[in-house]
Amino acid sequence: MKTVYSKPMVDLAGGRPVHCAPIHVHGLQMWTPVYASAAAALAALLAPPPAPPPSPPTPSPRAPSPPSARSPTPSRPAEPLSDAWQRVVDVMAAGVRQWGLDLRDCPLIFASTKGNIARTICWSRDGTHPPPALADDANQIAAACGLSSEVICISTACASGLAAICEAELLLHSGAYRRVVVASADLASGFVHDGFASLRAIAPDACRPFDSQRSGMSLGTAAAWCMLESQASTEAGAAIIGWGMANDAAHLTAPDKEGRGLEAAIGRALQSATIGADEVDLIFAHGTGTAFSDGMEAGVFARMFPQRPPITACKGLLGHTLGVSGLAELAIAREMVAMQAAPSIFGLRQSDYPGIHLLHEAERRPTRPLRTILKTASGFGGVNAAVILQGMA
Image 1 (spheres, helix red, strand yellow):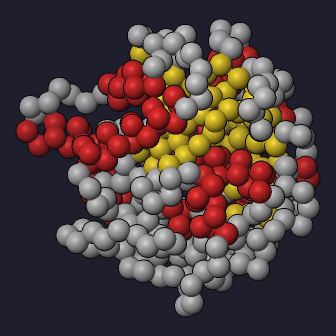
Image 2: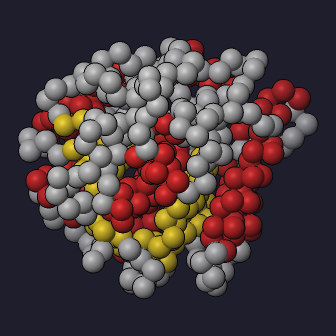
């Protein structure tokens, strides 16, 4: 088994993907400790909120508490990190094996921000473990899933999941493989929590994306996986019809205030899909709940989509699951197309951006058939990714 590290195979400074045939999505699924599937997460997002609107405080680092059925995921984990990582690996392996396919010659693209953070923490404390490497986590997942071909690791911060989709697209279009498995996993941990807290990015109460009173993010644990195929199968209910990536490189942790990287990524996604902005039925935003990131996204959406398509986001419920978030939320987007239901933005009370159509509680159903969804993600270092998912008839 050969493991390589990779960056997305596209010139982020000026290149852009050309139009290619759609890539078909098989078995797109996600998991969190609270919501065992994309369908369960969407059901929670669509459920009527309790009264008054939920605003539980972030659990104390010393006394973590499990979330209720429709409460935001706590930023601190409630189980040992080593156990949590093994649980994530077992869930992904079970999901992949359920496909019942011989995948021994199928490559794996593994996307993560920190991977098995438990091993990193142990190594930093006592040095008794080998220096941590994302390749070890990827090989563990590949073996558990029965994959023995090439393994590629991608870590582009919180855009990792969507970056892996872009990498898989290029591998398939190159003709090197007929199908590619993409998997992603990240754990909420005290280490990551404290890092974001040092940037004053953790909400003291609840995460409320695009709300006028938003005060930051919450964190979550998640895994997501799928198989991408160059040829449609009977199980494929959706396809990736366009993608784009760009790096604005404006700041180490803050986005470009004008959103030039995200605008370029979305433009490239629309171009590769050969569709116009008016053909996007829904935007599934990154929506972290932080002042700068939400403001950047809102400005880009207002400029690029004057027809004001509905916009949703789910990190108010699931938390920010780091590198997994793009792929996990793409799985929820696939469920939205299947259910023809677009949830309101969890935690949104008062919009801070009247120039865009942010979905509120009274607007759960799309006003037109929901077929084409734009999913965006942004990460530290200025990386931005956009993927367009389309339901298949």
